[in-house]
Length: 155
Image (cartoon, rainbow, N blue to C red; front, side, top):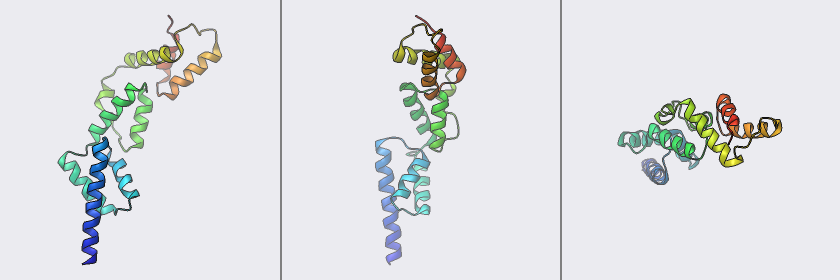
């Protein structure tokens, strides 16, 4: 009797914790699995609950990737960083919203970010400043050609 009750308790804990987490924001399957493991829930229970939630449509990695990528784009991050962060969260495909943006649009986003942060002054002769701004854009996840084009923009 004790073992069956423990199994039911684990199942209930896993379902309620997962639902509370999903009510706050979208999660990837990997993120949700890790958070439930931190709560000392057994792996087979976690997998069963996550399978059920995927079948119900409450857990969807594609939807998570799309929402996450759009949020990061709005915060001024580039494609390389967004894809790397998605991979850390267990998403190994490129969301449609990232595929829809052309390289020139990413370059424009990098230029707008540079303008917002540093202005669009002429830095062609100031190598230290150019390197500083280039490192900032590269850390934000823009490709080297996008960074170079953004650094060439002037008022």
